[in-house]
Image (cartoon, rainbow over all chains, first blue to last red; front, side, top):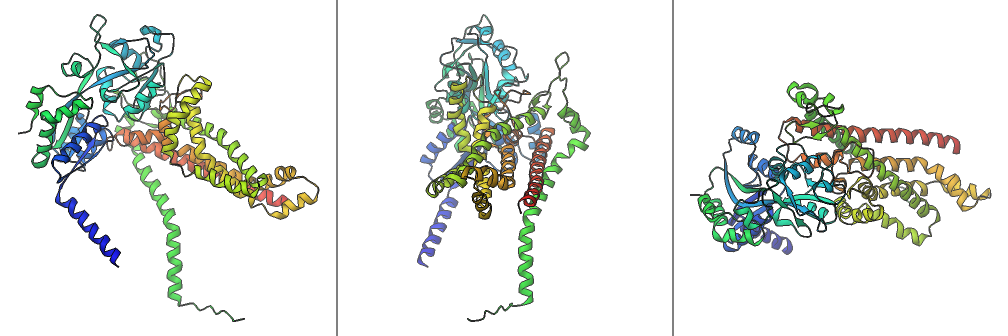
Length: 283
Length: 319
């Protein structure tokens, strides 16, 4: 009897604790999930009465959750598609977009690969299947093994739009769940090539990317992505239902503050240029 | 001795109890029917809705299509393209390839282990082997998949020099690991439940242990072993996580077992979370689900029929 009483009291107090604070749910892009996690940890430290629940699943998953009203903030590594905006309208949801950080899509190569730079046209050829051998781009005589992301990933869509000019990926592209898996696969495959966010790569090398044959080859890093000289870069967004107010507004403005952006840089995301961050702050 | 007296409490109790149990039994059946009805309902627009059919009709899903002028027609699974392509052939081939390798790997190992455990192992060994293999069934498939992705793929590539690190052989073997316990458990049970009188008769006629095992026990247990194989095949076709992680998920039409491949189940798992509700892609995924359902239903049914037939024949001969 006593035990039951104690258990009951514990349960009630636990529920009470949760009820006392505000719970914010964040869902979406796998690219952003790490940053979201670090931000929430830090934010919860400063604001102990706020509980932030964060999960990944992909930009598409996050946007679907926003449209279904099951998340407060949707993290996305791409803008919403026209179809999705239309669907939002039907459901009476007014998406409000804030870009919170930048990300460069790096091209991963095996450490032993002698190829150091690729033009955008070569990358397109490789990923559409027009170029299948490394010797066509200055490497050894070996088949190029393609790795990519599943088609629910924002990175997949962005790379397709930016590099492949919306053409189809080669059928031989092996799609893996998550950038970590792509990096891992390339690190173990000496003829492999992959793509993904800058923040993830260990054990592989980045290819320098040129916009055309005569342009300078640019290695992706914080500097080249934030000043726009690296050609494959993108903004990372938080979507809200309507202009954020109250706790949500406080959270996003904190993420855009100098402190928030510094955390982003610490874990290898690319912070927004200061003037952009200030411009994005929610009134 | 005291005489036991059975006193039914009341007719009403009995009636209610019986109906309750009947409801339990039917609940499972109803669940299956409802699940199938739901999945099939979501797939129907492919057959009826002309707007959806423009993107994905049965024709487009089965035959070679010329998607761009001047390029060769082909089977292609590219649902997120400017011109969405929903050919199911690469997926069906991938599914069958993985299942084939899994069965080639799991049947000899599973049945062999079952013969050893049921016929030749000492009691002490059997008590180690049986739970150990059955524990394989308890390993979450995501763990098996991860193991295949990180460890097995590297070992296999180093050993055989595969061009593609993730391919049908690697995925099939990982899948086989999930199938072995099913084949083993059912085959083992079938062999241990062969009546002792059969063995005794064999031994009495002067056969040695080997002869009794292979010519008496094994044939008598064949229906059970076949059932294990069929159930294992059903699992191999439907299993998702292992192939999602270890097969490379490239939708290619190719007979080679060393190419990457994509299965039906992995496609559903990877794409359903993203898909726009009510779109052609959404309906096609449910169509794939229906296909998978029918696949496994037919294998199980076929297996069941074969087993009954075999059983009858064996009983006719042995009794």
